[in-house]
Length: 186
Image (cartoon, rainbow, N blue to C red; front, side, top):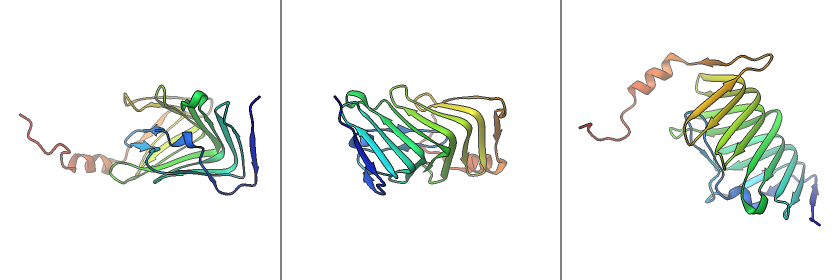
C-alpha cells in the first residue's frame, strides 16, 4: 500500500528531491536546465506526493523555480518511478516556461500542456503552442523539440496552422556576432 501525502493550501514547499536530479530542457536557441546544483522550489495551493509510486502532483497556481528558470501552470505532475525521472507535465491556460538563452536573452514558451521526457529527451508543447525569443516567434497546435538533435517538429490542429515569424534584425545581429571559437579556420 502506498502512502500519499496531501498538503492543503500550502503556499511554499520544497520541491520533491527527484526534480533536482538533472532535468534538462532545451528549446530552439536556448539551453534550459534544472540543475542539480541549484535548489528547486515548487509553490502550489495543494500537493499530493506518492513517494513509493514515484509520482507527485501539484495543483492551483503552480510555480516551479530553479535558478532563472520558471515553469508555471494550473497543475504540475512529476513522474519518477523507481527514482528515475521519466516525465514532467505542466498544464494550464496556458502553462508557461520562461528562461534566458545562453546569451542572456529572455525565452518564453507557452501551451495548454508542456511535457518534458528526459529519457527521449523531448519537450512537447500541445495546444496553442508558442515559443518566443526576442521578436522571433514560432507557433503551432503542437511543437515537439528534441534537444539532443536540435530537431523541431510542428503540427497544425483544427484552428492553428504552423507559423514562424523571424525578425530581420535578429538575423543581422546573429551575422554581426563574433565567432564563438575564437580560432582561425585552417
